[in-house]
Image (cartoon, rainbow, N blue to C red; front, side, top):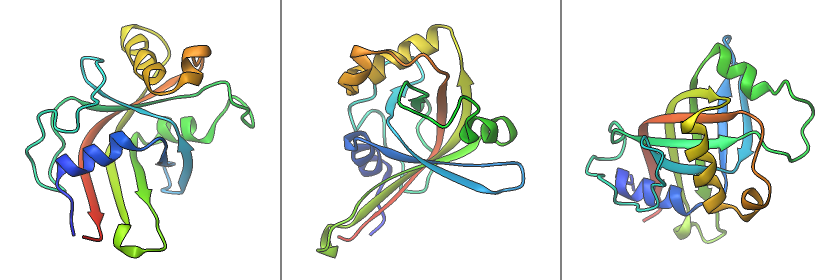
Length: 162
């Protein structure tokens, strides 16, 4: 069954990791697992799944939902990351969280579509880092020093078996 935006957001917030999909100017996709936080445009964590959500699945997202993910200290292949190059060419992205179970009655997925910007400094970056640190102890111990990807969510969609 299709999930409404409230259910999508609730399942998304509860997930510990997501997959970030970007594409270059030619439409070639790139997919990476990421840690994330869902925040309001004010920079405050959006941990309540019901924060002003009244729309149906597939409808526009409530104004102010943003997903943030950081380029952190975990080993990478270099500093010129494909996801950042893609965002410079094409800011449209999607995040996916899901649950797989051999009992297919427990399957579900949620997707958040949006438009990304890259933040290197400033107050939005500080607030986003605070939200990430609130979710992940590793970020409390060592704050990410790379750029942040901030995505304004434009659409929530999802599905669950029942």
